Each structure stands twice: as C-alpha cells, then as structure tokens.
Image (cartoon, rainbow, N blue to C red; front, top):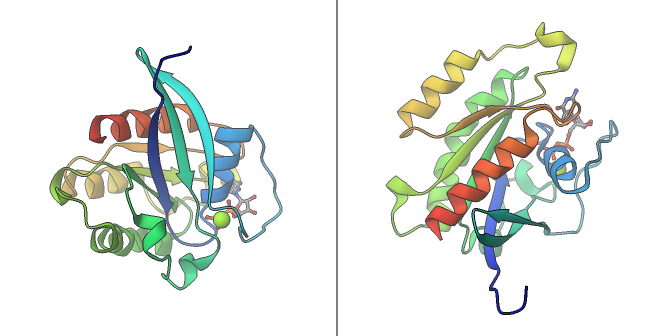
Length: 180
Ligand code: GDP
Ligand code: MG
C-alpha cells in the first residue's frame, strides 16, 4: 500500500442525549453493543478505515461527551467537518423535534463554505424497541423533514441489532468524500 494516500474524513454525530449516538459508533467501529447507559466521557473520536471505489479512506467520527445536553460543544468539535450525522430516536418525539436545532446549530458553528450543499445524513435509531410498537415518528414524517432540508439521505437503524448501521456509515463516508 506504500505510496497510496489515505484520505482523512471528519464526521460529526449530533442529536439529543440518549438517542444512541455512541452506540451506533460502537456498533460500526467495534461491533459491540451495550445496554448500559454511560454518558460518553473522554475520547473525542474513533476511526475506521475503509475503501470506497479505489480510494482508501480514514473516517474520523467525532462523538459528543455528554455536552450535547448543554449544546456547548466548542469550535474544535465542529472545525473541518466533512459530513454531519443527525440522530434521533424513533420512539421519542422530542428527539425528532430537536433535529431542527441541531441542524441549525451545526451550520452556525461549523460555518461551511456552501451551507446549502453541505452533506447531512439522518438516522432514525432504535427501531427494534418493542417490536416497533412504541414508535412515535413515522418513516414518512422523517422523510418529509429530509426532503424539506434539501434531500438529506435517511436511514432507519438499530445499534442494538446491528440493523442498517454499516450501510448508513458507508453512505456517510461517501457523502463526506464527495464533499472533501
Ligand atoms: P447517546 O447519548 O446518544 O450517545 O446514546 P447512547 O449510545 O449512550 O445510548 C443510550 C441508551 O440507549 C443506552 O442504554 C443504549 O444501550 C440504548 N440504545 C442505543 N441504541 C439502541 C438501539 O438501537 N436499540 C435499543 N433498544 N437501545 C439502544
Ligand atoms: Mg453518547
């Protein structure tokens, strides 16, 4: 592989506390899921190497360390992001209602050169809960929000059951690469 340059892509993950941001990243990067709730402490990011077409890519995925409750993530968190992943819990209406705020907050803090074309991806997580019976946000409603925001790609996921996690992050990586 000598002489081949790896492309570093920075991805940041935003959404209300408890929606499963850390779990999705753990499932994607370490193939692990934990039922225990631990507000993320410490580590700023995890990395995953993958190949997209003939390009070697290092995804650097930034997680919030519980500060999402205060919306005080600091400039280093947002700086140089190539893609923004928004996450909500399909069983919690408030986490869906918060998306607007997270979207606006990202654009305000990261201040990308072309906000209209900046790649966002939306993940509706925890679709496994109660066999889907406690779901309060429909796929249709989520897709309408995405359409209104300029056709943001949408994935329904379960970090617990490892459903759609790899396809979602592959889409994220591709979007980040296209924006690089
Ligand atoms: P964060 O605050 O957004 O980082 O959320 P966490 O990843 O810490 O997850 C919060 C809680 O939800 C934890 O107890 C996880 O085990 C649980 N959780 C995360 N994803 C899923 C999922 O897809 N399904 C189910 N049933 N629980 C999940
Ligand atoms: Mg977390």
